[in-house]
Length: 418
Ligand SMILES: Cc1cc2nc3c(=O)[nH]c(=O)nc-3n(C[C@H](O)[C@H](O)[C@H](O)COP(=O)(O)OP(=O)(O)OC[C@H]3O[C@@H](n4cnc5c(N)ncnc54)[C@H](O)[C@@H]3O)c2cc1C
View 1 (cartoon, rainbow, N blue to C red):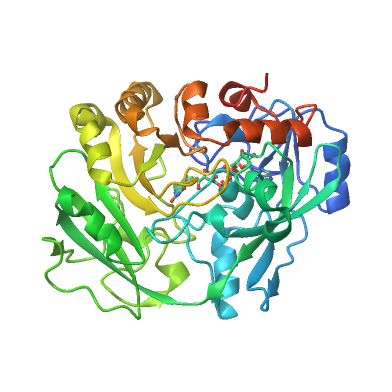
View 2: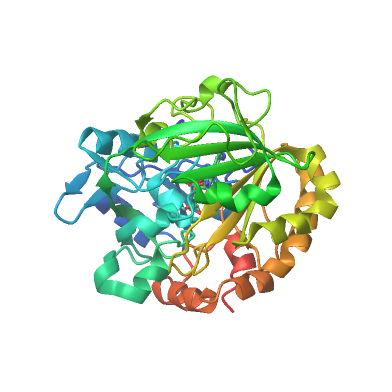
């Protein structure tokens, strides 16, 4: 990933080269407000870990990494307010040192807070929501350069429309997140889970991720992230065996890139992500797609069995996660406890895209909601049908951004305004 100059010129995966005519890195809020007010087309780039053109623009591309880095903990309200560009990994270290934690993290700590919540990024845990579900407040610069603050308690339903924003409502400059007392996690890897035990596995611990390759009837690995104060996993567990050493989810990749396993307790932020800050997450040469379907894993997975022979040759690894429902309008988990079916593909787009289409066709009966930041090809009508508040979001975007400053080609395609 390039971080030279004002911000990255391409995304982390290298499959999107940003088409912006100019790149900016404002160093003050006033500078940012003047820039937004004077722009006809503008987008923000976080850490560039999305796999599609959602963040691309022919206009001005802005990195917020130069804005003041003040972090403010409110111990009475149990919240922390952070700069939009702060990476989760840096925030986690800061919070843990002060005795606090976030309820959940994604598989990698490398991503920015605002970039992650804009796309509804998630980890796993059937009782815990995605990262956006912990947002308690936002500060943003709207299209005219005005500063708007919104709060979960005061702004109710509209606030629920503004968190998973796809960057379409304004430039988020500060984010307030719920915090909890810090906690420790033990991570075990178990091998060979019968598919029939998937829901039992999800129910067994705080955060559970299951990896498979669509080549064998059993699910290859289960990464069980238990709170350290929970009873240890029994030796005999769901007809699996214990891994004899640390693992990487992608076969052949080095386990040292991953968080500590083998049941050694450690702080939440050093166990909930699979990948360690400072190391390459995942394989590094890849594309990703992901679909959220209602929980009730067996039927959706069975629907993919007939295309397993197409999936396997272009797959590095498939990950299954559970995510609790939330009320955010464009969240993939909007009012739906979800099974997230994730694919880390090879980097060969020509080979991968037809398989993505086949997966989408098989999942269609489950009203799949794609991860907004990954590769997908669902028709706009399918997206509108999957999200009950889709039209409300379009109205909100029209109201906050009447001239379409924050529109992109991808948004025009997936969320047409007219
Ligand atoms: C190796 C790897 C592992 C991943 N693992 C997971 C995972 O475990 N779970 C998961 O759900 N996803 C995962 N993802 C996807 C990733 O979390 C999302 O794509 C996320 O949005 C990336 O955050 P970012 O900071 O890089 O945002 P970017 O990709 O830079 O931006 C994402 C969107 O947010 C907008 N945006 C960014 N900052 C702002 C702002 N301040 N104001 C307004 N809009 C803004 C951008 O314009 C863009 O549209 C993974 C990606 C990679 C590469």
